[in-house]
Length: 100
Image (cartoon, rainbow, N blue to C red; front, side, top):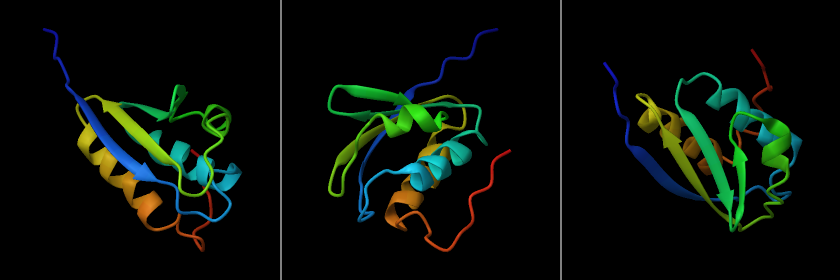
């Protein structure tokens, strides 16, 4: 039996004064890796796998950049909620980065 999952989209704005550098990209990827759903992050015509730090860095997202998040999978809404919270909270400046 095949289960189809709809695409869930959300737009976020980079508020970090340095844009998406290694630390925010690491937090996004670490968060996305906790979920089964896929995450694609788009800046204009450039797309990145949200579970891959180096791909996220290629987005060149500066402060004020509007990014589209696209998640597909059973837990996509929860994934988008958690990643959106990272953007809203300026990537929790005091939280250490952990990878699993």
